[in-house]
Length: 133
Image (tube, rainbow, N blue to C red; front, top):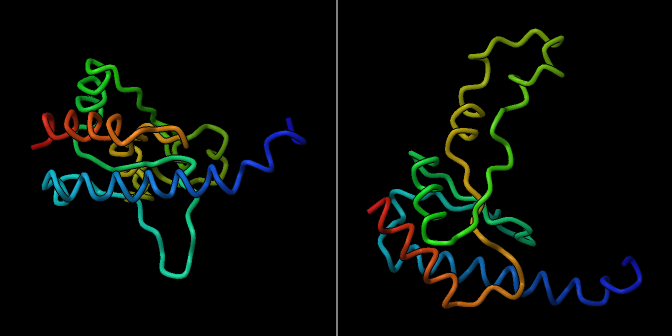
């Protein structure tokens, strides 16, 4: 695998960045900018968008809605680090990191892969708009 895939990596990253730009355009066209927080890409940095993680209130309701529309999503960090048993010895209170708690409740990864089509992305954003509009 490590001999076969590297020649494709730059093209895959380019396609994921293009898909991220399409998601941003579709969110704007749907008028969802004030209800959907998009990933931040700092100036002078290049994101590869291995994941396209948005933040939305009522994440679990939205995730179920998207699943009913045959759209796969994922929640990668449902429990912030300071609440995980492994880090209990550090002695942080559960309220120590409110921003991490909020992010854990709101984060939702939308479909993102190089072969994702604009029609598929349109379906994702149309379905998202049905739920958050």
